[in-house]
View 1 (tube, rainbow, N blue to C red):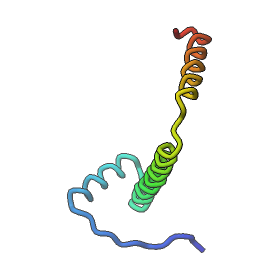
View 2 (view 1 turned 90 degrees about the vertical axis):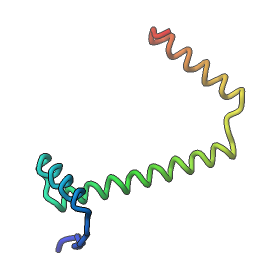
View 3 (view 1 turned 135 degrees about the vertical axis):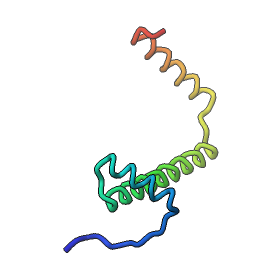
Length: 85
């Protein structure tokens, strides 16, 4: 038994033709290219939500001046060790 469902969609003609051109060039079937596009969009939304949560957390508890100085020194030391300074 397959773990898929069928879905009918409507697209503007211009988008359909662009999609057809791309999928043919890449050698994908219609279902595969739509699946890839949807997965890409879902992953983008998940990343955007994680970034939003990070930003909200940072606003609640940003680094202190002392922490920033420690990070800056660590970066400078790392660059020096790599001969990049």
